[in-house]
Length: 576
Ligand code: GLA
Image (cartoon, rainbow, N blue to C red):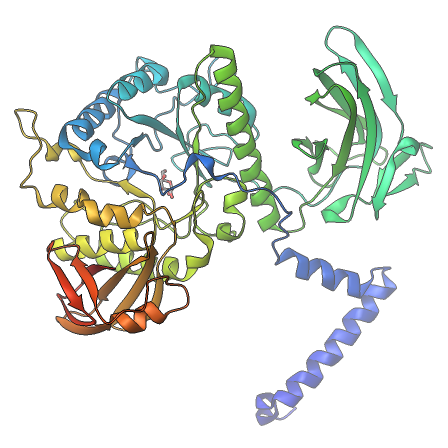
């Protein structure tokens, strides 16, 4: 082929059609259906969310608090956390709404305890987390903690993947009320399901009381029975990657916990996964490990878990709903959410105390489109990678998060990461003001990252002259973030200067002018035009009352305003 022909699209199209035909032929020769293969590959790029209820009651408005990560990273201790809680109370931050004191990574000991539970570093948190939670609670604040949806945390400490129930129980027993779940050392769940040859149920101390064989199962989708010619055993197959499921019924005389034993063919090639859903509600994850040394006829192995049955008839459905890495993340994050809610409920019942709902913060950096499913698992979801205390980072995160407005709402929030106001010296005061204003306009969780001890004077009173304390406790700005409508702003003009509009309760709106330029800007706002926007419920009037959030001034009788905005800064107005 001539060199110039390589530039012609028709030549490429012809060549790829030819290559595809050859590939399809080869696949057919090997007994592979090319269309099914294409469908499988396309499925790997998709998120297959199953309908689920939202779980928002723990965070009707965006959570507010402080976290140890942005400034202190690995250098944390119980003394620091108590000092921070103290400062939050004394500075007035707590009264302004900042309620959660969140310990991020590095609180853990390097090993679980003798009962398999996570434990705090014995040197830096010598009194343990429960005692620390009590100290934080005594100051009218709530304690938050951190783990990873992986085998280790981002700083390589023990983490919670496949320890969801026991870790949720531990956190609830400690009185934790906020939980951040990171994504380091995650393991993607296998799309393959094991071949199942039997299911047994046993009561504790009594042994097996019910054995079910494959022929008794009700099959759905591609689920089918296959016979192993060598051993003569019959297996349930066709459960891979959402293709099929089987179900069984079992009766229980009372609400009880029983042991479920599944017999499966030992997987030779890779770890395999099966989900069990009981009565459409409770979910159990079962993993069959890959064999150490594959042999031709490996025989069967047992997989066990304790399950809860209700009095009466129970339906057990087995499937593998994972057809992509997205599905894997959703399943894992939802599982932890369910365990946290269960643990909070059961701990309250056991201790005879009021339930402490746990705010559940999903932190998988936006990798698996968490805005699409986050509210069916938890209360907030990080939409981007980690924030850093410099302008390009704040701006980059804003540009991404601002587009996701339709997913935020009461109970479930886009999380553009924690605040860097007052962290380091690279962000100017104006940039900090822009950062804080944008986060409030976007109905973002407001989790401080700075050393709030600097907000308290030596005599224990708040340093009311501190520019960052003033900024972070601006009541009108916080009220924009916390507005009960829970709507994230929409960008109505994008450019060197953005204009953002956030509908507020009481037929009001917040309007923000954000100047990204290095020069001051003047931006004309027409309030009649803004009231005309479909998503704003402000009445049409000849003039409006306009309040400037940052200088506190109020003008009555305005229909247009030219906002003056400093470089890398934001102005916010409340219009009614
Ligand atoms: C990840 C998270 C951060 C922080 C660190 C802790 O990077 O995104 O917010 O929690 O881990 O190791």
